[in-house]
Amino acid sequence: MARVEIYSSMFCPFCYRAKRLLDSKGAEVEEIDVTMNSGLRREMMDRAGGRHSVPQIFIDGLHVGGCDELHALEAQGRLEPLLRGEP
Image (cartoon, rainbow, N blue to C red; front, side, top):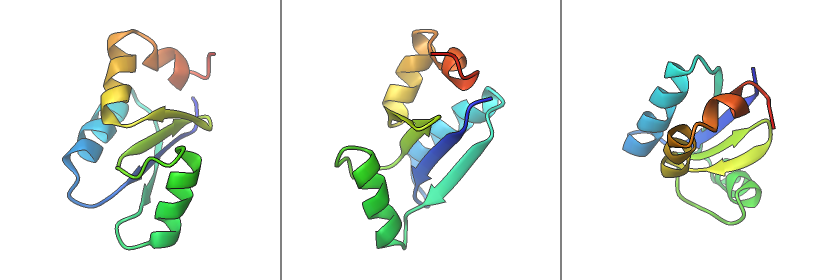
C-alpha cells in the first residue's frame, strides 16, 4: 500500500470527505493538522506548489491535489492503482 499524507485542519468538511474516501479504500493515512501550526502550513504550501487550502493530499510523495481532485481520480478509476503503488 502506498504512503498517503493529507494536510488538513479541524472542522474542514472537504478534509472529512477526502479522509472518508481514503478510509473506504483501506488506505492508511498520515494526517498532518495545520490548524494551529504555521510551519506545517508553509511546508504544505511548499510541497503543493503554493496551494494554501486544505486538504492537500500526497500519495507516495506525488501531489494529487485536494478533495475534488481525489474524487476525480476515483471517478476515473485511477485512485486504487495509485494506492497500490502502481504508476
